[in-house]
Length: 450
Ligand code: PLP
Image 1 (cartoon, rainbow, N blue to C red):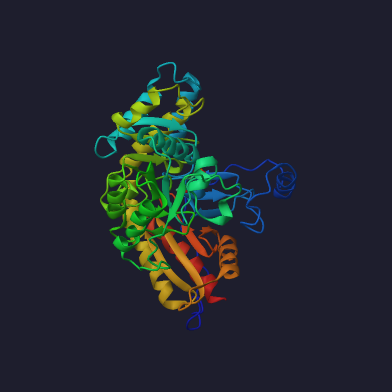
Image 2: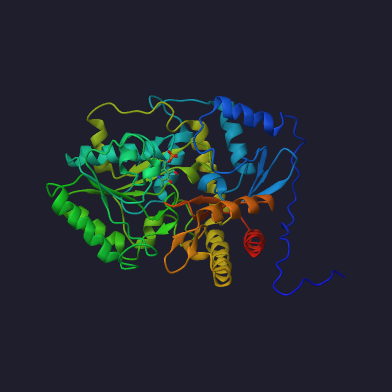
């Protein structure tokens, strides 16, 4: 018998039921942790939220603060948690492995490492079957770039403007956004035009953008290159899906110049696309090297480089190893994640719920002028806010406001893009349609009050 809402009034969003209550929290209050963070932890990214959440528990697609308040994790860590926070099968695999052996090096045999390598190889196309484990996406990309340089004997690398590949020497060079560059160590790196359908000069014509790769080779190098690295959907850069037809044409130019094609699948890979297991498959290409991290361990520090036996051979020229890369605790988690993905059809869920979520977000675009673009695939979606649709003027302060308000309503989303005005929606792949409704309703409610 509730009083009906006035016309155009958006109701307060209600979280869907979720059958879990975290145990009582006995740790220090959030303010005390914030004070320690300010004094003892790196000051970078302090501005992301005005007041960061004190995350105490995680269960599947939800996070809980010290008061037991529940938040939908619409950012999935940072696109890291794929099968859900503390999924019981992953917890079980880590605990079991932890009771057997926690550390083993590349010098010995251990089945937890070999089994996950075999399982990963079975998910790869072509002859991509040799796996090198790392602890992060940055390390995976550093190794991939080194392999390309060793294999080809060339130094020049091409990457895309607005791409993000990591924060160490070669990867920070390949990354092409000023806000993520400190000391620009980019010897031999050339940045090609970004095939960005929303802001790029050639709209959705992938082949026109790819011509710039040929130009970079012709005018910026000896005509021979070590390789080309790109994401298939740029994540940090603001969920930018490369214009159709781009990768096949760009790969063609790179291969003609003797280079290796590296697919950075750190965010887009591992089922998140829904329609395909890997992002590069959406453009119908087969890379020479694939790098991955984030989702493959469901947030546990684990990365990998996968390539062909012929290319992998270069690492026998000298000694190469990574002390913690492929730690059995992490690979046991990785194998459990892959099994859960299959058992629970999470890729299919990413397709079904992702398409529904995108449809609902697109409907919001019809309602609010501030939404300039809705894009992405599966459960890797972006919503770009602009103050003027024609000029595409980035709505920066408005996007911070919406994010903060949605947090108050119990929904966490991420933000990125060169101007910091793109919402990044990359939840765990286990979210339901009701969760998707909750997320969109929270955005709708917030925007209705602006
Ligand atoms: N590549 C891509 C596409 C990424 O999104 C990231 C991190 O966001 C990286 C590489 C670097 O990974 P990590 O932060 O694990 O070093």
